[in-house]
Image (tube, rainbow, N blue to C red):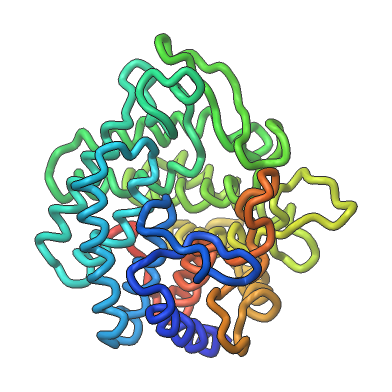
Length: 376
């Protein structure tokens, strides 16, 4: 089943190279990425680059490699010419583009670009609050002192930079931010806030909120998914057992709150009548994260079977009920993702990050490929 899904995905990616040209997919509208491409300006652009590198690594077909290398040039231009990047998503952008090229080809220029990207992410560090500010410039009245659970997936860029350069400051910042996220974004029942506010001057906690979830106290499923994968990655780099335990607890909560078909609703607390939108991208992230978590858990862990079975149920549902296998001319890999249901932006369509994590999970299941969040 996995190999059939992978073969279909590779064909779609190859077709999309011609469709997209030098532009980047973000979210589709009415099933089409092509009419809504961007010039490498969204937080999601790295996922297309990552898919190209995964495809090349899996097939050794230089069509994918040549397209992937072109994206790295675009990311170099983005970093060198756009000094106004006011968000934390540098890790999503450069881990899957230039760092991927370094991991696969040991290209020194790609390594240097990735270190510069880590330096850019470090400019988001707020010493007073001891946190990486998610959005907006320093001192921003609305966004200053705000952290977001998504940022856990950007921290591997900083951990990697410490290992690569020997400068421990990157990893110190990443570990502090991960611990703050663990303490304040993860609630006592193992659910999560999407975002959390701190006083910009004192660093004192103010409270949790959401940006894309159903309400401030609900559990936005994609945020929960970022936690599952992100804490597992912080454990890989730091060895802190609290991060591993948090990833496991969040994963169990996610799996225990799935609907019957084992693919997530867009929020775990949304009313079920009328039937709410799904977010297949959240389930794809969790499947990739579960594979990381299961690799890190000791063989005697009592939750391994529950987690493994949950992974298999969700991946089977994604492949058999949500994937576009056999759908001629489809531009996406995974149907029924949601971007911003509250904002009315692509509530039921293709999400490029959903496609990426679905592909990453498939390739890890089939061949043990692990994506580009760390060097194997």
